[in-house]
Amino acid sequence: MQKIQGAGTQGDTGPTAGVKVRSSVTQLIRWAARSQVRKELFGPAASDMSPNDVALLDYISKNGPVRVSELAVQHGVDKSTMTPQVRRLDDKGLVDRQSDPVDARATLVSTSEEGREMQRQIGAAGAGLFDEVLATWSTKDRETLARMLDRFVQELAEHQETPIEPVAEGNTK
Image 1 (cartoon, helix red, strand yellow):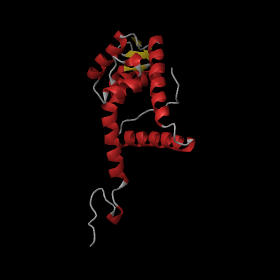
Image 2 (image 1 turned 45 degrees about the horizontal axis):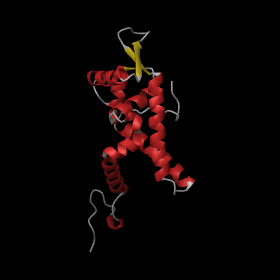
Image 3 (image 1 turned 120 degrees about the vertical axis):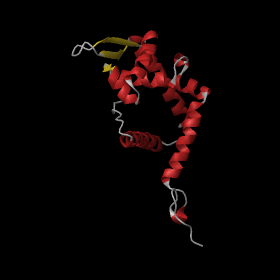
Image 4 (image 1 turned 90 degrees about the vertical axis):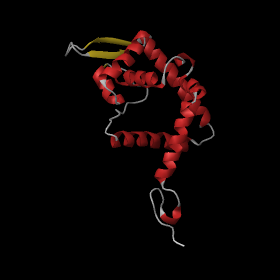
């Protein structure tokens, strides 16, 4: 009996890589959505921050100073949506806002000293969690995972036409 090849299958060989990746990504999303996981991933210093706040602070710390309009494009939202998100970080003292010297109508956002410290703590918590989980993996396997995940994220961004600027780890402006 011959199997009919359909979406997500490779004939007799079973599920495609796309099916397997979709399943794994779905499991990762469910895992990361758990409040206990977020506490471990972001650390106690970021307990009152949403995942969006953390992602925004991360982007600003690696790419700032940036215009609010650039943040909106990078995060796939309207500028009117991004402004209150930036204000939330500003209210916590994590970012500094100033007029753009090139265009005084625009606002530049950069990470404050407190924001850089928060970003350092969040990064350490996340790295610690993943180092613990990957402790039994070989160095080669850990490096391969890191390289392939980075490539996967870049390919997804390109597929969605949403550029994600590659930034060297630890590079803060």
